[in-house]
Length: 538
Image 1 (tube, rainbow, N blue to C red):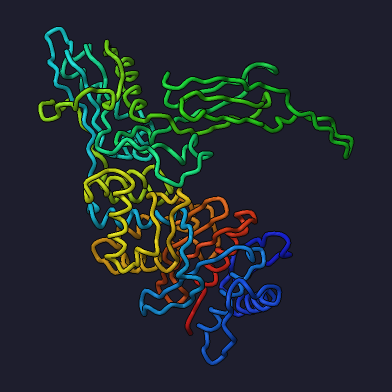
Image 2 (cartoon, rainbow, N blue to C red):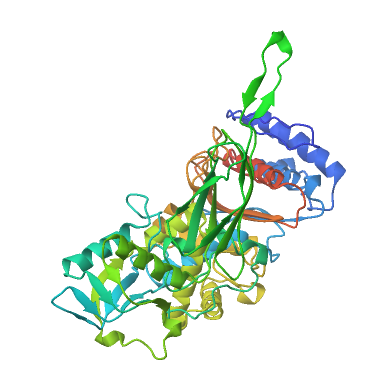
């Protein structure tokens, strides 16, 4: 393989690699030695011992990589273990408790399929205790009863990429029952979980956005809304916007305007001036505590559309509102209000209710795969709370954490040295070590009933998920199967890879508290992974 290392004041760029190990090892050796001369405090570098052979070279090269002086104020926790021999090929700060970011989803996925089973399904029901009259009126309320299903209305599982598919089907089911009018309210029931929508440790700045959605037992469209803005009809006019799904649940204050395209003067070769669209400066936000969306900024007249996905306030009411709007689009009149079960004076008599329609989720194996491939935070929180409810008896984060701690202890992890606040890793109160992660990876690898499901859920380097565009055209493409994680100042990646000898390794690389751009953390991880996939004991 060939590695081009640029000046260390800029980020090293990777180019496609050939499998020339001799040159690669020489470059790594030179780089590792030079970095140790600049900074010896970050990691303890093994002494050069030629008689140990390739393993010693690997240790030396990896130590050189993680001794990057850009991270002298930060910490790398690294653990690399052979799945065949159990031998640790490299360890550094591997017992330190660090912020895992979305690598915590590996625990959430493993716990869910271990305790609930990979064939577990969610169900979401449309219920009523009312009567259907001869004139097509349903006299009584209808209730959407959620049970924590993250796939309900999710475009990740909609066959036509439309979140309205389920509600359209439900409206057709009511029509087949002869219902054309509902003389009552639409109630969203989220009592399966507790009413706390957020775990501890999430930052307030994240809450309006799609990656920090409120978690509830009734989820629709992943508790988010998409808004797309595009240029108006003329310079100075208001920009245009479109909501998906289209709904009156949110209000939009449109302060965005359309500005003139840029005039670019080309002076070489007597070329004429040209018009270019220019850049957009659009900011789309949602106020906390409400569902008012504000659009600010400018788009050039011939500029491209800009999209933002935002979370919604009170997802249960959101789901119920969207159902009402869908029913009315299908000419089913609703005379009552839209409300949540929290507003009811007494519990709904579910045992006496009739099921009008039902949605059954894909199996948990597919849900975990969608969660890990896309690093979906809402999916993770719903699974975390579901396990808490099903195993611990309560659908809150405290119970979810207690169940997770017991699961960790069952696979040999010292739960007194970890901190669990949520299921996604978005909380800055989560703490695990690189060694905890490799221990989990080894546990799942050694479980013949779960290993295939767990392995298939991981993004594949250069192929799909959060790794789709990373290290394409290198020896790592299609080889590394791993979960990524990112928070400001923190970058992690953990999973499996195969060496040149066909030896399967589990690895965890967690970088915390760095102040350089995240691309530099990616570069360090990439170099380490390339060294590992090209490792040979021969």
